[in-house]
Image (cartoon, rainbow, N blue to C red; front, top):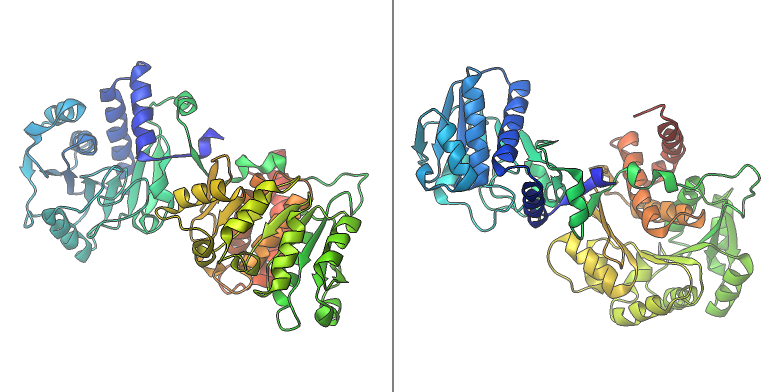
Length: 497
């Protein structure tokens, strides 16, 4: 799992410190970093004039190593320093002294290579505003469309939050060290990275054990061994019976999309709980999915008990009504896993504390909330980066939170966080979120751990969109799920990488 670790800038500083305490010198780490960047430059470009912009800290020290390496390889190297390099400290000063070449002070009108720029001005710890001279230089670079290689991050990016300063350049290649930084995965910074390469600079994996609160990037290695596997002697109900509450006659599509996605993803049986007025619509449009008419909360509770429902999804197309509230409260009184989406979240916008109190005293299995940004803001008052907001929301509510977005964040009440970047922009289409909720329900009802199931569902949902391609609609997502599950089987057997 450590291969998927993502670090904040503070955690990266701590990893550096622990590595140095373990006997690896700071100079060795910096040398390895700069040589690694230089190697990627030599792989991606033929020898050409290159301008290397060096800053006042260790990022600048990396830049001096790159300058020395490329110069020794015969490249024409120009180095421009933001500050007098004699004022550098520690390892960065030593690397400047090892560079046998001219260094000039960066000016707004400094001549620059039009073939390649290396940005070694500020690293992932940057905060605030870029100096005016830096903004002016990068404006010229971007106007001329000169390729940029960023060391660690493009200057102006906060490596923890993904926020950017005015004037941040778009890189063609970003080379970072040891592990990806959290800001690499978050917008808007993700749009400024170009190709992201993470290189080994000698920090041992063991240091991760000393770092608390590590976030992980979502990938199958985190949960693939926990995916439910059908048993040869099993039957449909042993694979899990899931239920989704459906909307009225004019809003049946959401529940149908979710129900079919659940059946594809692992549920042995799925039932749509329909209002009596819409029963005929569901019955005529669903085949493998069963339908049951339930009007009142008491009857809903009795039905959940009688049918031994493993997981229930409430909200898609349900309407912001008292019936929705009643059904949510009834479901939360039982041991089955409860997934709340869409209207089942919005109905509590004026009294979220009541919802959270019910979640925290719920018997049995977990509760999963799947809000998009607007729904999240209706329930939670948290501000700041999405990762921290999701983490705090999970702790406040007692639920697993899936905060949907370009970088979807999954957090649980114990503080674990997974960030999903396996997605496509064409997922922004009606019904896509209903399919995601259905996939979660399918995996959970089949017996998968709720937190891992939520992460797996986010990855599968994005993978289905990527495979289907532009022009997909929500109904297409379920059609890709069998092929993804088959790929998982091949992955586990070692037939694919």
